[in-house]
Length: 210
Image (cartoon, rainbow, N blue to C red; front, top):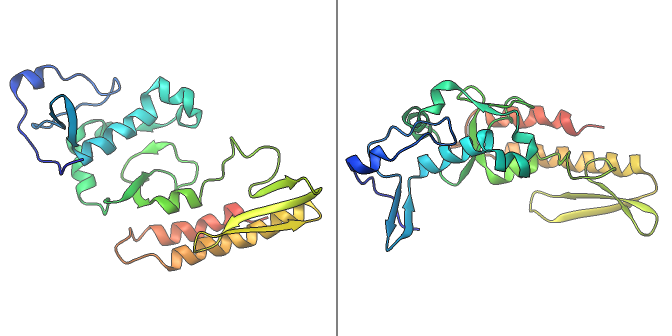
C-alpha cells in the first residue's frame, strides 16, 4: 500500500457519498480511498480507523461474527469524520490499535474519555476470552494425562506451561504469571505511550487475581 496523499474530491464523488454504516458522516473534502487501474493503492489512515470503529458498533454482519460488540456505540461527535480525525491526529496512533475499555473495563462507548491507542500486544494481553475459553478458568486446560495445565506467556512471548493436580492450582499459577507479565509490560512502556495506560494496566491486575 502506497503512502496516502489527500487528493481533492470532485463534486461527483461528493454527491455519491452516503452515511457510513448508516450513521457516520464523511465530511472531508478529499478522496479517502485512492485507486489505480481499478485497484486500491492507498487509504486515509484516519478514515480507516474511523470506519472500522463504526463497523464494530453498527454493522449487523460484524455483530453476527462478534456478538460482544452488539451493545457498543459511538458518541454523537465522533459520528462526524472530521471530529474523530482531529482527535486522532493528536494521539500517538501509528502502529497501534484503538481501544475503548482498558481505561474503563466493560465500557461499550467509543469517545475521547474512554479511548486510547495502545500497542497490539496490550490488547492481546488483557483478552479474557470469556466466549471461547471453554469450561475451565482463563489460562487453564485439561491434559490427557489427567492433570491440569496452566498456559501463559512471559515478557519475551515464550509460552510457559506447567502441570498441576487440581484446577485451582493451575488457576493460581496462571494468575501469578499473568499479573507479573502485566506489571513487567506496564513498567516497560515507553515515554511516548499515553500517560493513562500504565496505571490502567496496573489496575487490570485485579481482573486476573484468584
